[in-house]
Image (cartoon, rainbow, N blue to C red; front, side, top):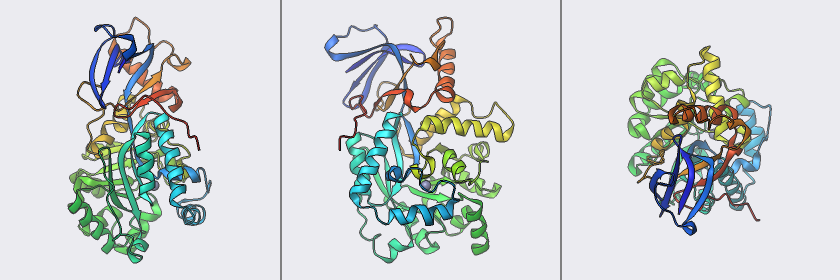
Length: 405
Ligand SMILES: [Zn+2]
């Protein structure tokens, strides 16, 4: 199929997609196109590489906004765990399907999930064409009741699976080491909630004598998993911990909306982590704490928090936060999808630039580079995920199907 008259990097273009790949990106009208093989967007759409939601619990759409107003530990124990104990695999499929559709509708083409009954989430991801890593989230209980031994990989072309230790407070040192050996042996991600709250950090220091990242290092986890470590949140870090994460080329996922809603903190050390060599990525977290899976909103909040907490409007501009939400996420998932170019997988989305907030972006007096900069600023700071009209996942039809049952 050829998708005609779409802006790519500020230039009106025709994009050809075949077999899940982008086979050509050419200046609009430069090649003759038969009408039956094309869709004309009349210059009213702008194409961007798909975004990567690097920390989700997708089935938590079922628990959207539960426990509002509670701090993390009470929120988990009083609002979340009692509900989750009653969920069936069918419930998890329904919740995950809802999440995959919501992500696609707002331009997300890949996600990094941790939950239980992963076969339900894998099924939902397959049906919606979204790719990523889907991990079984485990606690010490899963070792006691034998769930770990029953784990089976459900990998396919677009989806990888793994085992995630929930956190250092839900999984003991011996089990954290076992899972690091597992990740090392099977070359899988080690996705863990890490240093999310000040309380987690203080508890770790009083129990183990060192803060969370140093604790993982002393267990040998960092050396074992290296760049496969995906640490969600990591709000409460000191210089030594940042250096350790950088030396191991780890990935950290910032989830600004969830952190703010749960009152976990707002001083994410973006610049320090980036400069230490950490791969900083972006996520929403589950819908119980972030309420939605809108990565456009997450980009805006991340960028504004950096500017506001540092009293510096030049920090984390639109172009850079977009790289955090796309390229860095794909790097963590070991995919090379963050560009709309010939020879790359067709994971991209279209933005409706006829919307009011994009007025003036198409002004003829600006060059493609300036236009792209203005467009990205409007997309991130002025628009929302509902400005996305079509999401292509590895060449599937540009559709966001409705749930019919
Ligand atoms: Zn989480």
